[in-house]
Amino acid sequence: MFLTNGQITDIHCTHISHDLVEIESPIGLQGSKKVKLELNAIHEGKQILIKTICLPSADILNEHDKHYIKMSFGTISAAERDFIDKFVKAHS
Picture: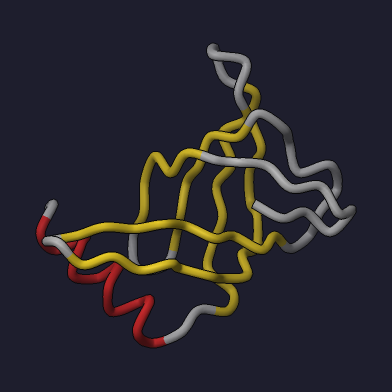
């Protein structure tokens, strides 16, 4: 995850759907209105690096002292969204 203040951190994706992604991060948004997110995704032997600009809607410190961050996809390619849709369909 890349914040607008220049900070970069590793994250863990906890939920993904056609429009939303939820992650756990060791740091919060720190005022970032947009976030660049890069996710290494694997599904049915296919791997893709999802690169997207997200619009955060929640940043909550959870019981594990991690930040639960909920975001909607702002900019994402059609191929990346198709990959996510196939993943979601297979796991629903």
